Structures are given as structure tokens and as C-alpha cells.
Amino acid sequence: MSKLHSLLLLAGLALLLQGCSFLYSAPAPPESDAIIDVTQSEDDWGIADISGENQDGEPWSTEEMAGEWWVTKTIFTRCPTVCMTMTPNMAQLQEGILEEDLDVRIVSFTVDADFDTPERLRDYGESYGAEFSNWDFVTGYTQEELEEFAMDTFRAPIVKVPEQNDIMHPTRFYLISPEGELVRMYSGEDGFDLEATVADLKYLVGQ
Image (tube, rainbow, N blue to C red; front, top):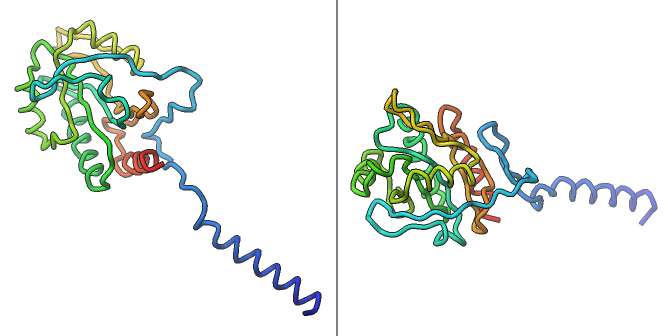
């Protein structure tokens, strides 16, 4: 084989390998303004401990979630504002999680535990079409315990606004890793991006 033919063969092989490289490249997380990657921060985002009971009156705790991926948010059944957007968004996210067969749980913490009994939370979940197989609605703690948990874990306050019959609470969805670290913040209200959020969960959980 001539030197020229050898060079042409090598060049063709290089182009072929370059063209097929996409088959072997690692998948990348989706880019979206609705996603904040907390792992890029130097801060410690370990979650605090809290316990209560779910919509069936069964004990629930952050300790028992060790080893699980879970998405969480705050709600309350008498919420006159943001919950009416956030909870339908979470219901859509649950559909996406189930459709993709992702091993991800969902936890909604009520910020009105004195009023929101397990029975009220079950009725609330049912009204939005929640599937309770992987979605818990949690109550059964004191207001002080929840406020401390939200500040330590989400870095966000929970504040009662009695003159408006409202409670100010976080509107993001938060993803917790099996190691008990908060790794993502997702827009949970108007900026919610279902496609990007499901894709990001698929990227992380599938690793």
C-alpha cells in the first residue's frame, strides 16, 4: 500500500471515529432557567431532620428516606394563592416520573399542620389526582419544627400572614439525593418546566 493510500485511510478512520463519538459520550443534564444545580455551591446542603405522619396517619421521617431520591415542596390545604399552581404542577411531574418509571418519591409538607390533618391532606391530594403510591402529604409536627426545618434545609422562611389568611412559604421544588443532600431546586410555580425537570431527574437518577 502506498504512503498516500495509508494517509488517506488513517484520515478516513479518524473522521469515522469522530462522527460516531456521540454514541459513546456521557449524557449531559438539561439546561433550563427552571433548574438550579445546588451541587455547584460550596455550601453544605445536607437536609435537617423532621418527622410526622402522612395522609394515612402512618409515621414518616427524613431518616426513613435515606437511600431514596425524593422531590419535596411545601403546601397547605387552605392556601389561597401559589399552591393552586404548585400542586397541579407537582401532579404533572408525578405523571412524568411514573411514565419514565423513575424511582423517585414525592413529599409535600403542610405549613399549616394544626389544621391539616391526615384526612384533610388525603382529600387535598385526591382533589388534584395525586397517586399516593409514591407521594406523601406530611403533617404532625409543630410550626416551630417546620420553620426550623425549612430554614435549615431549603434556606427559605415560612411566615404566617394572618391579615391575609395566608402563610408565606417556598414555591420551589427541591430534589434530595439518597445521601440526604439537597442537589437541585426546580421552579415550582409560573416558571415550572415539566420537560426539563423530568429530563434532569432522568439524568440524575439514571447515573
